[in-house]
Length: 393
Ligand code: GTR
Image (cartoon, rainbow, N blue to C red; front, side, top):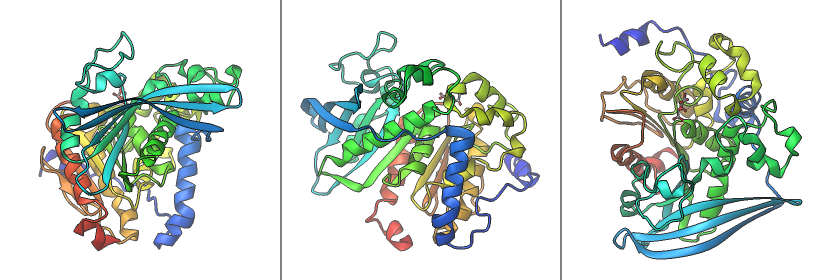
């Protein structure tokens, strides 16, 4: 017996997201909403409302990028609510049309737009990050070759990722500065980022070449937690890809790996990501009326891909796999098998289940070309016109 199998066989039962739910209608009409509210009150707070005005300005277009693979647009999002304004710079790549409507991936980046691409003619976002520094995380030529559009913007433009980020975040469109101090934990970075992903989706919807049924949200790590929360709140997302999202993302909190991130650590280190109510459960995880497969279940019945990296013990790959497996009970209500009883896989052996996927990649906490190979395959298999999807709809 492998170590993972040994661990799995001794684990106690998990709480069930289904509670009193026997049909898809029970889930959709009642239970889903209850779980969404639980995450709102206990973990991520409320998603901000829509401001009075949302306007996208295409500042610059460039054709034939990456050796003629597609085009690039630099866009500014202008937000206004009453007299308060906020703007965000967005980077948008589009593949050349191949006759069909195009799928799109939207997701926030860590280090700014210039760092997300190998192209060197973008205005630098900050002196802190170098142009192209995280281009490997997006693999833009690969996406363009696969006929997929990418829309990305910096996480810090929606909520600067630190203790005082709230004051300058998009929450300032709706609240006065004195309502956005360190103590106003109900306004969280993760909700601001998830809201940002929805705004990127709004931008995708302005392009008639993009298929509105195929706009995916993608995120890595804290932004992988965000991707799950964005898909939970915005039914327009075709599905979610959550990479190395770990604690408060896809990894189950109960029976975590002893070297993985705990609720105590995460709530103390990143209090601006979470509602203050979560603090009470630090070191009392088993008292939470939920576990993280409840969050993943909010993407159901849409396709969901959960990804781990083998050396990323902090994010607890085995518990991300357990989450991917446990979410199956909800997909089953919709006639999809999820990943069934597939065992914890070896690296580079993805489980492309029925609407749910899970894989383990060799290496560290990151997003690599290998990740994108699996992501693109998952997206292809779950495209609305593919045989697999038709079978289940
Ligand atoms: C870590 C944090 C994780 C994860 C990661 C990241 O420091 O403990 O929860 O989100 O950052 O976002 O890279």
